[in-house]
Length: 382
Image (cartoon, rainbow, N blue to C red):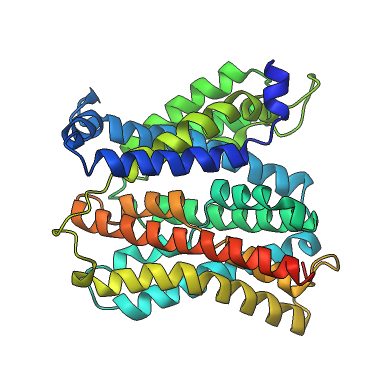
């Protein structure tokens, strides 16, 4: 039974769960039961100063980033990012998809108190983007999948680095040093002693998370740091520790962590106090940054780099396919919501406004992507 589960393409299911979680959260928070939602996530504490909402955003999302980090590492070592020739096209596409939304957001919010949200429109939601791909996969050239995945992985790597640096508070050198020691022990266990114990890496990983959390650096960065130290190849086993960890956490990540994150972060009370007209620069910065900046940046950077020979477009992809990937990549959703949480920490009004902008933008992107896919398919050009 378990083997059958792992053979199922779970990305579309995850996308459906994301949508359901969002709808349910919106319904609850605009009903008489909103107090139950708020009490559970914000007034229920696991330990002092660490409520359920923090547990989801800081701890569970570290597992999400651990798996994303392992996927990135796999692609860098053996996959689509394993050589400069293979990596240059999606990397340049990702750079364009980060820079252009940031420019658009800055244009509307420069010299305002909202400029801290500059990283909100730069992210791509891997789960939703791949979900859209799988829903329409019969229409696509199979090579589109690897291009989309590579672009999204590099995109989220940039987001992870920015979260861990731009949005980190004052660094506590003691806990930062202890976190660094944990990382060194993990790497030594891997490279020198060739340890292949999942318990060894997970226990040190928990210590790494704890010290990173106390250091002032955003704790989710511990996930990507742990991924760096975990063996990507096997020394004695049939499969690597990375493979076993990804297999063990994959179902939990896609069926629990991602939907729970969406549920805990999209509970928006749509009332008169949340008036988008009061924050036009935030709305335009996020909405146009994702919906226009992402596709424009990806297309502009890939076309120019291909034109001057800095990178080469894969022969199996045409420019319509690249455009479709750029449009799908404009679905920010969970990653953008996550960044808004750390960008405007402590200001629930700005966080709620950002969530609404992200939801509207992501919904628009999904609709446009679906319509364009069907239109281009009927014209036989994808």
